[in-house]
Length: 275
Image (cartoon, rainbow, N blue to C red; front, side, top):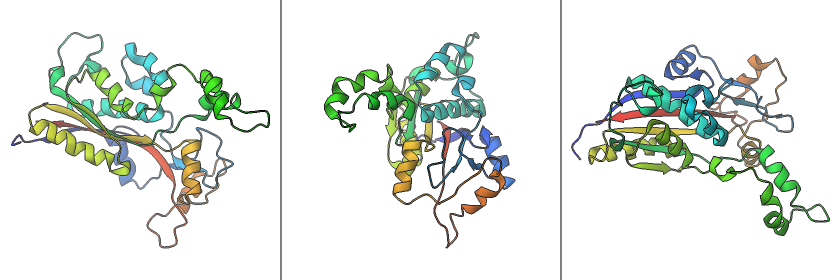
């Protein structure tokens, strides 16, 4: 347990854009990412703003041969995959995912690369559930568990479950970068990312790996997820009309004694730990 461990690369995806440099520039400029939600119609919610990573798709950050796999990535997974790529670029190392079709060899042997990533509660997308739920009602229009098992589940898209398992964040990162060392997923709410860094450190210290992906990713910008928080009274009553984004974000003041609630966001932070 005497091996020294350092953080050699930092990768982020936030409302400020791709990479830690974009995040840092946004922070020092005092900008906010809170805008009216565009990923779904928020009109029925009391809180209609969030910190979205707009114009983002994991397709732009995976090898061409892996782009089809993006179809089975929930938003949380997409964020993690892109942040992992940014971390590799930040550290200046070579992996299978950065080599693509070029000749060469990765910096570390695959068996010496681990991955520990924290995950949150991944909420299913409503369009994927709608058909299944619509065919699971009884004659009175009420939800029926019997019909859900007999008919409703057959209307879920193929490989549906693979989009929403929390371990799929680390799974896709390890496949892309051929990290064949110890892999783990930590699901402890907001503490998951920090705990995963400690896990990666111990993996390297006991000489089970020389390099580890670590950190966390989550998107709370989902109709089901936001409704859950709204019922819990955690979101502020902030309506937002299109085109007035520069005004609405000022209503969210988390450290103000008179704060009426918060707003949600999405993002990922992946670091590389090396011996």
